[in-house]
Length: 175
Ligand code: ATP
Image (cartoon, rainbow, N blue to C red; front, side, top):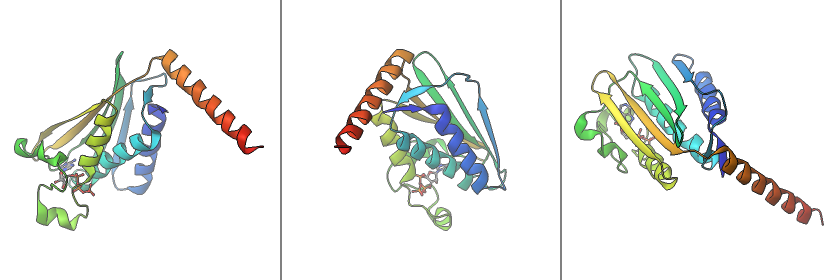
């Protein structure tokens, strides 16, 4: 499926601003044309929700979350940055394991069961993308995801195919 990345990022950003009025969300987009990635829209939405949800959950002292995205010739990179508790080097890989939570007692009070990042990573890798963490304990974390983009031609072709398929479906249901 082809998805307009800027559209989904903006939508999730707007929702979080509304849901968490006590946080400052900053969206920094250097991109002025639309970016098409070959990912199912709901999957991209899900990934962003997991990352933003964590950014909010694990940064209660400085309530600020930055969201940026940019593209090069092959990939779109989306970064979610918080200024919260951070993740130690030793835990940076483990947080992607299912059911792994850094501080079990403290985390329990915040809800969740350690599945979010495992799901996000699986989804991203399913689309030949990647996810990385930069973090400093006590200062915060940046989660960066990278997804392959589609050239304008390839995106147009796919969108056309999709429209044709939809038109064909409508015809059939109209019989
Ligand atoms: P849920 O299943 O609801 O997502 P969760 O937040 O515990 O629960 P993950 O999203 O997989 O699960 O995160 C795993 C662990 O990684 C968390 O319990 C937390 O300890 C740590 N973590 C995730 N994101 C951050 C972050 N932005 N800052 C600090 N720690 C984080």
